[in-house]
Image (cartoon, rainbow, N blue to C red; front, side):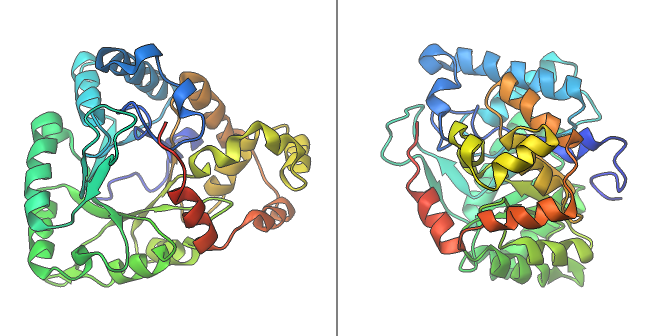
Length: 324
């Protein structure tokens, strides 16, 4: 049985909510410091995350994305599920492979540490299970690149296949300028003749569309494709875009906001089953969801390709975004 219905009942069901920006006090989204409650205490952040989850569920979002490295995001989500009667029509995905190390500090020298070893998988799966229990529907390897050992560790492949046999979909997320290579390598991995990775979550946006052909291949191969960072960590939602020579005329013609256009562009990809909103406020989420009402013509989609940067330029810029 597919994890997501093949034919969503509404366009909103193609949207998901990612908790990267609300499970910890610091993140690299532009303007993040003004999005969160004063003091950014654990209690205030918990309430803030719950308000966002309440709105997402009320508006029809049925997929929530989190990760072990998103601070207390899994904990906040688990508390929300318990307090709201654990809605059964909600799908939950989390990720392992990064460990949160910032100790609730925005100015920490290191916010997360990557490790795709079997020991990290064992530890983080136990941590995720202790919070989400049987509500875990999808467990993804976090931020796979072509040189990640998870692509070649056959012993770990069998461990992941054991999780899949228990009913949890196994997937991976990718990052970096060579996402397409990581995706295609993952598509070739099988255990006992069965594909191991059933979902792919990748960065795709108007500035960085290079993974598109590989994501199309994944879709054609029967994998679920999830788009992350469709707003490029806030770069595609900045006020100065009002003067952008490509975006501004399309915004005027469609009566849409810049975030709406960027998210709509992702939703127009036939291979994208879920497009994540990384909203940190209820206002941002409300605006993001308007993307489901935006129709972009073939000509407008073609004009938007002019925004693309080289993958190397995009990821170099992203690596320099400050935690705030």
